[in-house]
Length: 123
Image: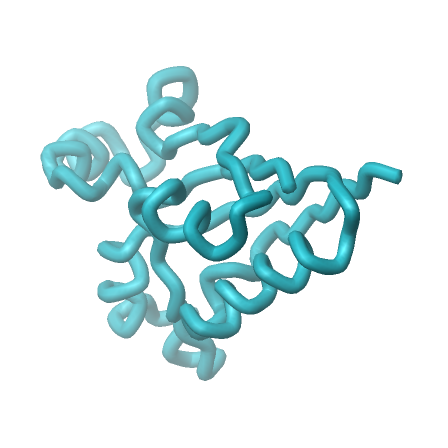
């Protein structure tokens, strides 16, 4: 029976090895289905040490994914990217998250478009 696994708000708090093992375990445990999850890009995880709310809570973003095919599909032959929604695509239809000026400056960074991704993998 196909299984849908939703892991929202999880991946960025995992160590890369933990995140990779989680995806391998899902693909290996179920006979087929999909996993939907959000990720942060490597730029965001590197800058997370300066985010006040994270520092005050003792949390940190640890696992950043820029290219999901490169980072995930090799983990298990069953894992195949079905859909990817990039932060930049979301911003085109919503108000600027960091204000007009901040968003326009941030969008000049090549990795900014990977700042947040919504991913759907089949397995």
